[in-house]
Amino acid sequence: MEYIILIVVLAVLILTIGGTLLLRPRGTRGIRRGRAGGDLGTGTGTETSDSGTGTGTITVPPPAERPAEPEVTKPVLEKPPPSAGRMVRLRARLARSQSGFGSALLSLLSRDRLDDDTWDEIEEVLITADVGVTPARQIVSDLRTKVKVEGTRTPDEVRGMLRAELLGQVETEASRALRTQRHEGRPAVILMVGVNGTGKTTTCGKLARALIGDGETVVLGAADTFRAAAADQLQTWGERVGAEVVRSDKEGADPASVAFEAVSRGIESEADVVLVDTAGRLHTKTGLMDELGKVKRVIEKRTSVDEVLLVLDATTGQNGLRQARVFAEVVDVSGIVLTKLDGTAKGGIVIAVQRELGVPVKLVGLGEGPDDLAPFDPATFVDAILGG
Ligand code: GDP
Image (spheres, rainbow, N blue to C red):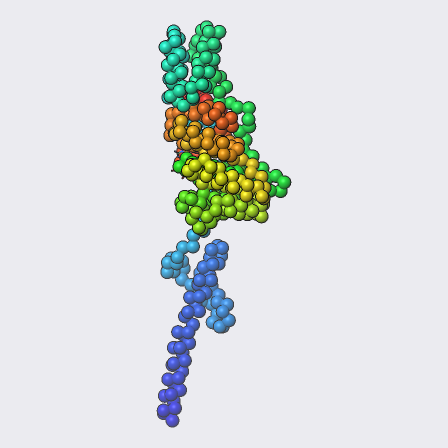
């Protein structure tokens, strides 16, 4: 009999201990679920287990006492500023880099006597600023005539005269507006071309940001499949502002097929703009022509290409102009993006490149910051040159 009592007591003890141990893991599972609730801002100190075990409520220690849990970080989308007024915001940066040649011109033009040597010096300053020989001569000839006609030259008059002359050289008839409107139920397509290193991929990212800042939806196509980092770079830009990025995981994949996929995705998702980054290997003109030609043809199976933007590094001067010529022979360039204008005093390249290609500068890069890309505005540019 005593044995039976002992066995019953032991059995009760084993059952009690076993039950307690069995309940513990269930409690832990509840906390994890609760954490999800906490993410929605509903977390409380007490949580109810609904696992159907009939164990009622379990008490969760206040947050301070809880063991550290891994942080689940959600990417926070940035809200970029709209594109309007950016050039004015960046004018100081432009003035810092460009006003050197502006003030040299102003001081030469303010001399009491404007003899041939002075006019030669003026031409020299313009050429050094990459304006180009023919436009520099044109500017000097126009200014000479004006000085002769007007006679007197107060500092304000000199400034006004030079401002009008430079503005006349920078302004073009062609519109600088980017075609970014959906049409025929399809997104606008922008092809970004240029030699690697000019800032092409960065410009794609910056432009996507600016468009999103203007309220548009953007799909990015990473068709620069030859530079391993380009797709990653573009992906980072896209993730920051919520632009979908279409890329291939295979290095050296066919750029045309990535471009086709990106445009197809843009059509499907009813995006406003599809921006396609391309590879800019200037190996041979025929190679480049084949590559870009194919990308364009393949896109055109789905929709039209609305803009071909040629990205040029303003610091490369004549070399940049040579590149521009080759690209213009290969594709129909509709606009120029002049990058790194913050890093050169040779802003005259704006005049030279527009004249060379017959297409307007539409955007300018004025720094490495994500919002340092601005729609080009001639008056702000000329005022920055003149230190205004
Ligand atoms: P890609 O090879 O043409 O695609 O060139 P990237 O987009 O990789 O850019 C090359 C370098 O130029 C990067 O370090 C960029 O930050 C820099 N860059 C691009 N645009 C500008 C600009 O407007 N100003 C300055 N200062 N740097 C720029």
